[in-house]
Length: 346
Image 1 (spheres, rainbow, N blue to C red):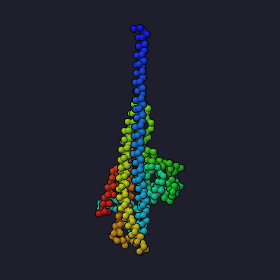
Image 2 (spheres, helix red, strand yellow):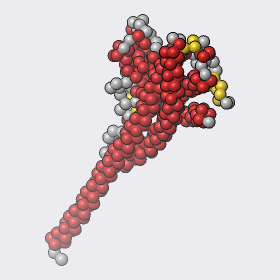
Image 3 (cartoon, one colour):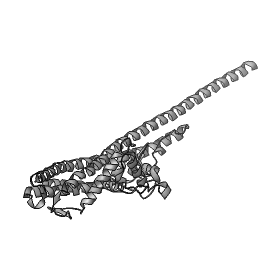
Image 4 (tube, rainbow, N blue to C red):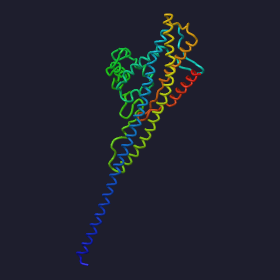
């Protein structure tokens, strides 16, 4: 065979091999690109799932926090009614059929009522998770804190509108910045809902650690996505549990609140009628049924006061850990409420 033909054949073969290698390389590049895109898409879907779970949790805990504040604010009805009763008994530790409700004073109930009213007034337009922050810390505690003193020296309870809201946020932030506290910004940060979490509810974990764009290198991208997916799945379980606990507790509060509403209404009617008939309301002239109504109302106020003290979460010891869901504390409060309601219904 002539040499030029041999050389031509070798060149053709080499060219064909080169084309084949190029095609193989292009296929590999396309596969790598597809893997990276798939990893990014799946990561975005996972993050969206996390955001959805977090939103549902925040809505549930907000509903609970707002409900607790509304209950505490409603204690003004009890306080104002009881103040009109002469020779009334002292509200010491309440025991009824084996159930004990902690001691509280009429002033404590009144303070919690006023403080809760201040906080409710500041919830308008608040970030998602704000009311849930109150539930996380115990709404009773937050309400009492709201009766602190503003940086001007003015009692917060005497303020109204935006002034009360700002003073409350400053108080929750540790006081005015000029006085060495964190000011309104810190108060807002402590109780406000961040994009993917509510500090007081969730804890120090940074949600955006599992978000954002991942590597363009196929193997790294897929590995990052899988690691993020594992974290996200774990967080979604946590958020679903917190949502479930909040909703369960809210239902229990509603049941006790309904009993309280019935009894406080009966007490208001009794006191109004006594004043209308005699000019004064003397406990010594109460019938056994009317005395029982006062006793039951005081019991329910104490029970609700206690329930609203329960912290929804326990603060984590480490900054990068999730707060511990206070499931046991919530369950104990619910069990006590069910026992009390069973006794009252008997």
